[in-house]
Length: 418
Ligand SMILES: [Zn+2]
Image (cartoon, rainbow, N blue to C red; front, side):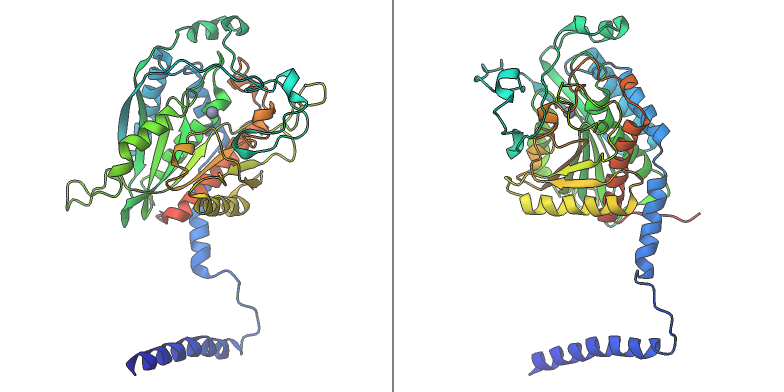
């Protein structure tokens, strides 16, 4: 039977190849390097891309975002920041810069049930259930959003942040690295450019926005090609309930993978392969002290927390993506390790989690740690550029190294040799 003969021939070929190889290797005693040559070429290319991430450039981008104060959605300072981000992306040569428009008409907040929200003094002693299915342990401090303008003692910053938000039209900006052989497929790399709390939203989420912008800069360099596409998304309205990312999913989900115009080879909305979100990237000073104060320095054990949501439809795919980033961190990140956890929550990857592989990178676990008050600047007047030192900024840089190297692998990135 032809079928059997075919299988037999293939099996023979498979057997013959390694046999022939082992005979050829016998005369030379030195061991063959374990890493295949082709792999190390790819690694060298990725290493070159990672080396283009610089602490000073990352800091400068965070600083640039803080000139617009807390960038609260529905204000001029927010719109000015969108304009500035767009101008930066343009200067990097990032392709297909788009403004996405949506309406934001907030409904008045529902009254909070007793015990919900921040870890107030009464609930703190007994409540251990954190958001996203997490469990809180250890010392907790108060959390919440500062709404008191007078808490900001920097008068210039107070004035900058003074315009209140009004409902209405909103915009957010994205740009794309178009793939060479698979332009119809893409990974989405995101951060949210809006903030609140009367500070500068330097960490939440200037730190994640700057990562996305830095990756857009590096992937847009003319000597870099990727087989698949990468979209860089600077979400607006995260702090009001992920409204910018939700609008993107609502407007774009059905357009995935459609060639338009037909026969053009152009795919305005490539098929989504994964979404990688960056939100609060710099401050990992550990558990608060028993008296509620914080360690002054980044803790030596600081790490990048990669989270997926185990209670989502795409949990298996998301976990797989998380481990790809974890492996990339071990190989390419210079200073800080990564940890994978199952409780991704309260960030722009949420609207994607039942549709595609979706993960978030953070300074800490969102549910168990940030939610327990481990970041005292969170939504406060103290979330300003001057609060952070190089060890803090370096954690953000290591998250950038992690995502850059993973996405480079996932999209088949290559750097042209000079
Ligand atoms: Zn945030």
